[in-house]
Image (tube, rainbow, N blue to C red; front, side, top):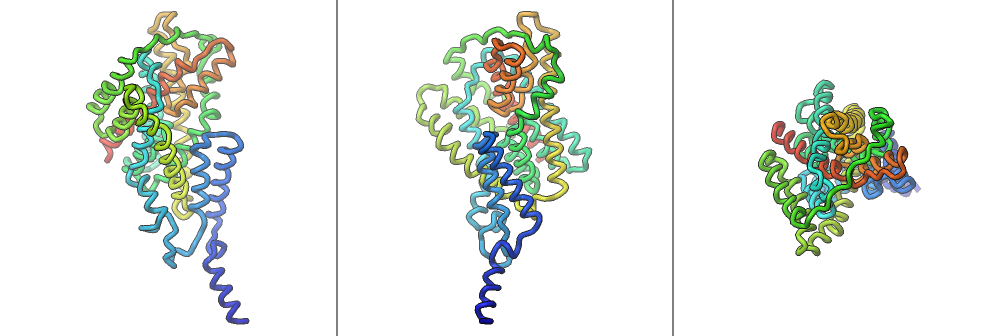
Length: 382
């Protein structure tokens, strides 16, 4: 009998129940919230479901002293090897390849001045960077935190992996959380900063863009951006290459692979391993709480910057060329969610004023802008 009890005690010492802490319980609840938002409310399910389930995986406690080789931070374990794609920065450029292959830059090509809106929204990145410095973070850490304001998860992961690997989990979770909450965060800011008259502005229909323009855009875009910010080459190079595959007309199979099976596979691995990296012992710190607060603030700053820039820009435009400030929010690179918000808010005030195609211009410009901003921060701080 004593032998059986000893075996039972030994067995129980191997179970997660013997090592669970309040932190693990908190993180498991956090993971369940992610799953609930993704499944029940359809908030970015392609991101929140893998991340939420990854949080569950990463917070099943075990005795690390027994060398079980199942944890994401145990060198040589399966999860650790998969996580190297995040840590070494392999996954984000592959995500950008897929984004480029599925993005239509026609709205931006037809109205290039919309690029300025995408650029103005990047103020959120540098605003959060400045505030993070004031909060006592090191410059490299502040740069990694600031990129949350770009509303671009892969860019946040890429930059934090280079500048602040110890904060990557918190930064990645904050970036993806606020990307999912864009429909909640942006509308109040947009309404507060616009008048009823401004919300009713009708914009000219975008002109038709030729196939030749679409082919030249990624080539010229690559040269212009990377010659100025060469440190952004991994992200910008893959983004424009993916777009060339889409628009060239002769690489359809490659484009379909990039925007289909490839990006889906990488999204699964990225989301799951980022979620698993939120082990309670590594994740639950005061720095994580501050990062979440700064992330929310950076989104508000980015949204406000885009809207206010349009209002300022309109002062110099003729009446027939004025831009509806409601598309200013789309300067963040949460594609296409922030553009849809421009459309939905606009329709609330005029059911015949369709802003989606106009909003896609600054929206895709925001993707380029966030990658350029990441390159600038990497060049100065790495």
